[in-house]
Image (tube, rainbow, N blue to C red; front, side, top):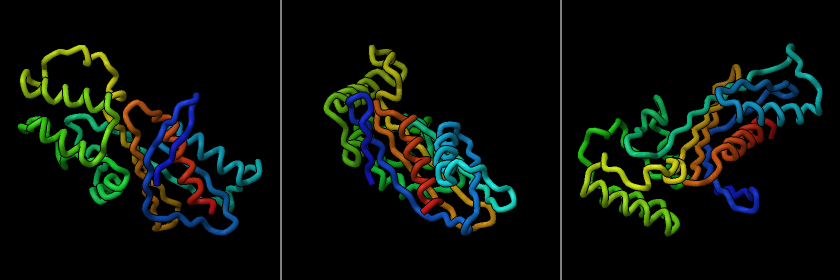
Length: 207
């Protein structure tokens, strides 16, 4: 599922994939606890709106626990950093259009930058400008080593690499779990992507 959002006249897209479900008890109030303030705020707003502004009833409420992890797909990142203890979420990452990094940190392993870029490009094509930069970066690494300085070094990394947002949500007393993976493309709005992730979780709880 691809979700495109217009912000300030420009299209910002996050590709979101989900697995699992959440089923809240009938007539129970849901109270959210989240490790990310952006997701927490959206969940609070959506759950409050579902109660029509009424406060939650502590005697008939369940806790929705959401953990959020955000990682940039830059060289050196590993699956262990993105999905601690849950490599099964790799399939969601692939479905969202991103190439999974190695299981462990490959920073010390020799990597052919041209082959690495060819694999990444085949799975997730970029716009021409980003393609040109990444091809240049691969060439620079091959000729000069990763430590060589270039004018591109001052470009913010989130303008170059995609960012992955991972959320896991569960309800108190239930075995069900909802997993959400969002791929935020280079230059797009990670804050807005988190809001979309939160809305998907709220929808899963409320419908």
